[in-house]
Structures are given as structure tokens and as C-alpha cells.
Length: 111
Length: 303
Image 1 (cartoon, chains in turn yellow, red):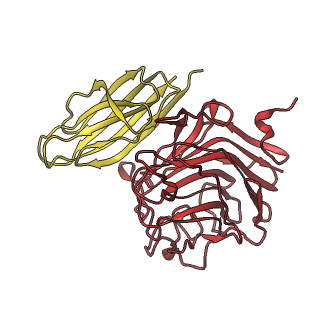
Image 2 (cartoon, chains in turn cyan, brown; image 1 turned 135 degrees about the vertical axis):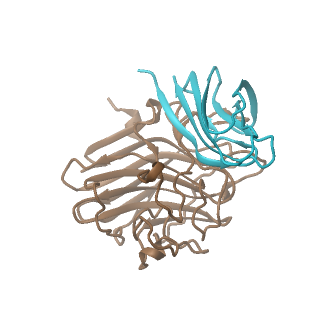
Image 3 (tube, chains in turn brown, red; image 1 turned 60 degrees about the vertical axis):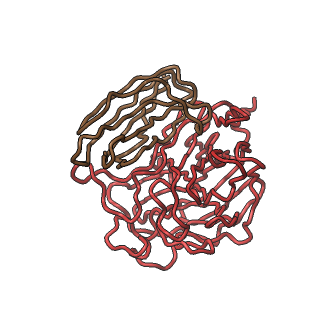
């Protein structure tokens, strides 16, 4: 049997500034999918930008190279990643002042 | 032939679980509230329970030493808070704790019930220095219910209170307070006095709390080590008598504390959870840091 684990790394978290998700150790896994549910809370059209990051130690982070298309409004999206070493997280940014989103982010990992 | 993996434990006659996290999370999951309201909402509470830091399988890897692994393998169960905290005497901040729970039910006539684990703890090494004071507390407990009562029976190590090291053990036993007092002075909380002392029950600047009693003469050094990136595996054994609903004893490292003077608090049974037997582990931070509790393995046993 292959190992499998779904973790809700962010749950209905309201973000109105740059943020990063709860760092998750995934050394046991060889593939993962980030699922994102985003709900825009402001009236503007400012996007939510998300990119995958990896880390040696869970403290120092580097871009993995995978990014989501800019998210707007109420939207669900996912991105696949593999060959990531020991840690994964998403870094989020809101380039337009006054933007706010409520996000639920799952990290689904498989050995 | 001796099983060296189990030889480091002292189980009672009947094993219920031997969870070595080299085999996965073994049914341990994040503790969450009940999503039973519209749009999967949860009941309003002074304590926000949806944001506790998610648990994970850890290799205990740090920047300079690299990978610790676990005590007898590679993976441990890691509880990790988020980097946010309130002062000790306030309700715990959303995300300031991480909880792991395994959901069981009783299957034998009630006797003694025992929780053992080998564990280690540290802070996230995101800055220079030594951060022992940033870990507030960790503990283990059983959430149980029979036809007579729901009981939370457990112990915690109060490491630091608002940055001041305490290093003393406490046992779960509710003070003579009302349900509203228990919920930090709010009415209508789902939680009754005696339930969820991990985060309910007022706390006081000297480390006292309405949910706990200090165990006498229980100040104890636990080998935090000299740097946040070094962890040492520690032994804990907590024994409770499910039949008499009384505490028995706590062993931490090589010290044994008699708990027979204490009893958990009886709460009127809740609906739909008769026979509940949920072991729980948690850790709480004392400042805006991520703090970690690593659990190599757990044994739950009964006699």
C-alpha cells in the first residue's frame, strides 16, 4: 500500500496581506497536490498569487518553480508537485492594496 | 526473543495500540470542532478550535545538523503550533496549540488504562539563541465516557509561563467554578466545566489553572539540551483507573509521581459518545513561535 495523507494546512483563513502556509514535512512522499479554495472578500478585482516553495529545514524557503494562475473571485484550483525533498508550503501575495480572501488549502501527499 | 522496540515500554497486560510512526500516522489526526451548523459552521466559542497547527510525520531535520530521525527509525509524529500566542492568562490564541487525537472506544471491562510515549520537544530554529522559554506546555490525556460520566484524565508539563520557566507537572482536575467561568466568563459555550481542560479553564500568572492541579514536588528538568536543533528522546507513562475514575501515577524519565490524591472531574455524559476512549497529545507555545513536540512511539494498554 502507498502512504497517503491529506492535511488541511489552512482552514478558512482570512488573508489581507502576504502570507505563507503552515510548513508541512513531506519527506516520506514523492508526489503532492495543493488544492486551494479561495473566496474574495473585498469588492475589488485584486488577484491572489500563490506559488510553491520548498526548504531544507522548514525555516529557509526557495521557490520550487510551480505557481498558480492569478486567482480572482470565488475559485478552486490545484497544482501538482514532485521531487520536493523534505518540506512544502505555498507563499501567497496580494499585490493590490485592500484585497482580502478567505482560503482553505489542502496538501495531499502520496509516497 | 526480545522485541527491542517494545522493550522500552512498560505496558499493562493488554496492548490496545503500539503506534510507531515509522508506519504512518497510525490513526492519529488533528483535533477539530464539530462542523454541524449551516455551511459546515462550528458553534461560537471563546476558544477558536479550527486553527490548531496541523500534525505531520517528521524526520526532525534542522538547518545545521540535518536529520535526527526518530528514536528507533526515521519518522516521528510531530505536533507543530502556528507562530502566534497570547499571554498565559488569556484564552489560547487561534493556532497557539497543536493537538493530536486517536479515536477509540472501550472493549474490555474497565480496569487500569495507561498512556506511554517516547517524545522530544523544541522550538522552530528560526533565530539565533536558545528558546526553551518559548514552549509553554505539553501533555497527554484520555477523553473517556461511560454511562455515569465524561472524564478528561491527563497530565501536562508546564514548562514556561509568560517567559518564566516553571518546569512542573500538573494533573487535570477542575476547580470549583461555573461553566461560564470555565469558558473564560462567556455563556452558552458547548463546553462544560471539566471538558477540554487543554484550553478551557482560566489560567493565572503563577501557572495555576482552573483545569489543573500542580503535582506536589514535581519540578523536573527534562533535557531540553543546549541548542534548539538538538532533541533528546524522553519517556512518559501515565496511568489512570478507568473503573474507579481515579488517577494512579505518572512516570516522567526515571521519576514516578503518585497521583492517587487526584481524580478527574465528572461531567454529565454527552450524547452519542458512550464508550469513548480518545488518547490525546498536545503542545502549546508561550510566544509567537512555532514549537514542536515529536513523538517516536505510543503505547496504550489496559488491564
